[in-house]
Amino acid sequence: MEEKISILIPTYNSKNTIKETLNCILNQSYKNIEILIIDDGSKDDTVDIIKSYMEKDNRIVFYHRENKGVAITRNELIEKCKTNYFVFIDSDDIVSEKYIETLYNVLKENNADIVSCEITFNKDDLLNDKFEKRVLNKEEALEKLLYQKEIQNGPTCKMYSKKCFEGVRFPEGVIYEDLATIYRLIHNSEIIVTTTYRGYYYNRVEGSITRSKFSEREIVMVDFSLEIYDFIMKEYSSNKNLVKAAENMILTQAIFFAIKAPYKVLKENPRVKENIIKYRKNVLKDEKAFRKTKIYIISSYMGITGIKVVNWLLSLIGKGEK
Image 1 (spheres, one colour):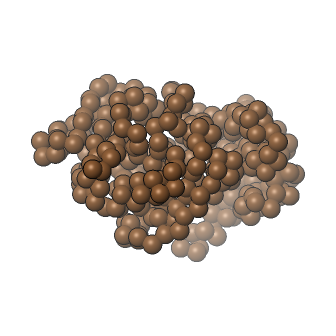
Image 2: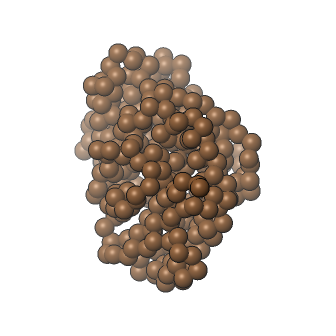
């Protein structure tokens, strides 16, 4: 008999997308699933829609409560999950009909703790069954994560063994909570498999964190990158490749914040500029750093204004290529 796999779904005001999300989950080729949903205080018709699906399929387990935030919701879903393996799927995204089957098979075949797939922004790519895989140990996977190559920081597009979350939960009351979490899950793992399987469609919904206007709360990205560096120095200081990757993480997060933040905010947070100056020389010499990152580093020698101007020019070039 197939092992039961849990699908964890946090929802909030998802009336326009939750039907498509649930349809793709209920049509999975892998049938022995439970679908755990916590609604985080929706004020639209999300709850009624989910209840209507519960009447059709008893694999859905649903909880509704007042709004507490996505991190608390994800943590509660983990606590309620009783299976050995699970995935997160956001309530505005969809997955391939073989999503659970594919990730689970790769996980079991390689005795892995985490299996990741690629995100696509084109629904038509979800039907791609041909893919490559790479088996990594935790140090190799951490390096990929810190360079943002093959493994992304988001909790979705991955299947986890529940043991990865022993002693680890998403930090509550902050944004970008996944940045402070995924590296710890990898640290708790022994074998991680990355794949080129495009099984997860990410729906770019207006108003999401990644598409919203700048908030001063985003300084947490810089702070989390410093925490990651401290963690790497404590646990893996003898691995020079990982140390370089952690420096790259600090530098890229500082540049990303400098691009978005007004000058007034940057003046109030001098550690952003200090981190750019401190790590730019090392990252500039790093063969694994992205070329675009190095362009920003060169522009940083003209100050924050140089970074912002180059970002504006690169955005114009990007628009011209579309």
